[in-house]
Image 1: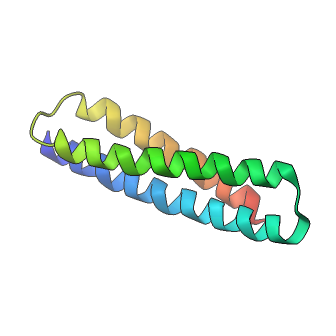
Image 2 (image 1 turned 90 degrees about the vertical axis):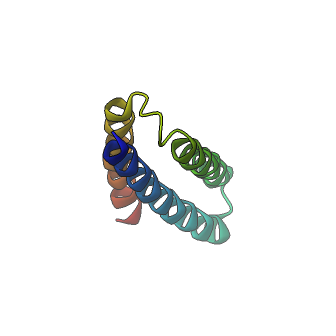
Length: 92
């Protein structure tokens, strides 16, 4: 079970990197176009980024308990896919 929690933490770390990339792109776009929609995207990605950092803390604190490790990993892995698609679409 500790392996599943470690994989969950790694997936959360990947999510942090993806969200950081999205926030950076949105910030660059906001500097160019000053649209309130882009400002909303910055806020959105920043809130999700903070949530993911808190989730990593919680996952580390639950490491020994092994509560629902498989389910949490599947949720994090699904978010990796979703954020990757969003980053790819945003980048291109």
